[in-house]
Image (cartoon, rainbow, N blue to C red):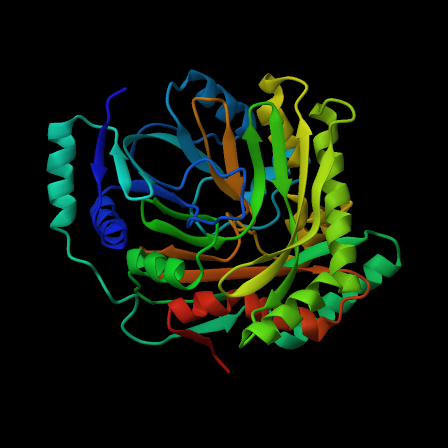
Length: 429
């Protein structure tokens, strides 16, 4: 395999400059684990895939088309599944127009691949080509400004309407329609210009999450600091790590520990988490060896730069490795972003949210030549359309009968706080 290895002196400067260089191409994708130490299943530290030389963009049969493309490819492929792929899985009609202009599914094999492990960079080129590329990259100017002026965002679901909707969902739960539902809203800004490369660099500085990604698809950007894994395959083993439970960081070590304990012992958060764990176990069952499904960690409290999260880990052994993509399809969309029972809540989500989620609560990831894969949950994400100059930030929370509407509203604000900060943004009055 053609490759060149280089030792870097300044990793941070390289990461910034290589993205400025990559931005000349119509398509690239960064997958960044941010050296997160509390993840025994992580396989790659930092990967950049630039320029699509082969790709698949199916308009139907999304997972089957992906499977065929993956089988034919001799190299690692990367890409995404839009949340709305669920309509095909659950035989649901398309109810809301998706204004994001991303396809429902897109995977590609890249011309250039940059891999970082520590300060060692590997490029899939011979020495002469790699040296020439590095010279171009080192000559790039580091861009510093994300946005020139403060950006004003507007809530698409006003506060009073949100409160009414949460109360409606609680009534549905009391009526026995479902047990838990993830309800999402969005804030938007129009006629704004940002530097997406700087936005990603700044977001990684302030919210270094283990399943972060930065995607350019023509004029459209995804700037993501996700803390959540959807599904991972290692050999014959599948791993899912749903998040349910969020708590802010404390102002000092004492308060931080108090808040962690408050999250750990919250009856509401534990009830939400265990319901999604049961849903994930059910999703994995059809393709698992009987008796192999395990809850490796229940109610684990994981700490990130801006929040504490309650994360559980569910795993199983595949009956046949050939069923890996079918198992992914069966688990999609992820239970943490839908609820239980899944089919009922998906129908209600379509009705109450009134907009397509698009890529939000979809997934970005890779499938490599070992047959392993790893896909995130697309949350804590800025969506930017360079052509229309529009920004969308979506966030959601799990609604149960015990939910307090105002507390859920404040949880949404906590989840988008760092994203607004990166963009020098605030909500309009």
